[in-house]
Length: 417
Image (cartoon, rainbow, N blue to C red; front, side):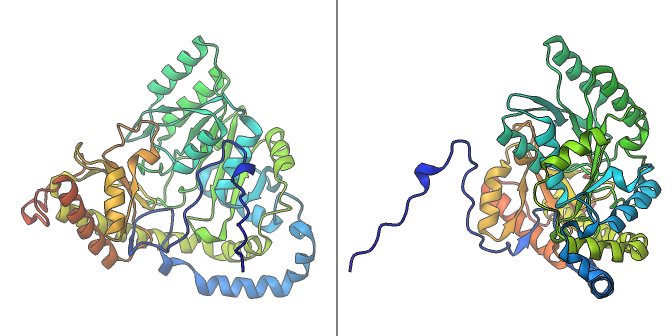
């Protein structure tokens, strides 16, 4: 019996596709990657109650695309967001200024589809969200990195980049910033610097694309007003998410934008609506519980961050440098210059430890070559300690760093350079 030759799809694939995905083989034993959150902090009981209540009351609206709330998403969720954004971020908007999307990744895609064409230029933070950088590369858009300091994007560098592009007849399509708990550095841009960015935006006619998806997770609970809230001329698009505050697998994010942009993005959102059940459950749960859930979540995350910093201090000594972030779920770590974190990533993964190598989160691959991003939200305290010990051992074998493991004499060394 002859075996049929399998059909070959390769000749049919268009040029420019991303590399094929690898098969899923499960999470690493010690996983410090991705924007995953603390499994013990997902408010499961509250979500169960919300599912039951909202489905009993409104379940029949699932028979209509958009739950009879229209293409911008479930109206009670948008109304919750108008109150939340006013209270937390100082944003004054109505439910009609908000669109619910499938996570902030769909928000990125919609903004990009609306504004960008191949060959365009955008200005981004030099270290920034890998998902944003990958999308720009795929679209054939040039991402120009603006250096950061401990208060976020540097305005002197932004002003210089805008002036340089203007002198060459180039108007960047937007300035992309994560100003409130920056990813990966964890900094918060102060209000005065936000005002300066708005001035530059208006002066050069370049809108600001504000990604605020980590803004709920600040240790102090206090934040500057959103750039969107401070704008008097409407040149800001604001996006956010429930992924970090409630659960990433729900895939619910949102966009706040002027109608001129919103109407264009709506025309491109051709998926017949983001997941309705998730929106209903979030609206039902968040209205009464969000403001008590988030402080509890951030307390747990802060404790895990402390464990991670202690473990790095103990295992790496002065070989690991970092600034304690102002909030969020990531620690951005600098190892000695001879450590190549792309190589360390491979060796660590073979030993059961997953890390995010720095070059994937930066427009300056050389600068980020010895840096790595560690997500501390998902692993348990015990897994954090064990994982960092394994990572230190792998790093020592591969690069001779640190020279000694668990160097107790250096335990008290100041690592926040």
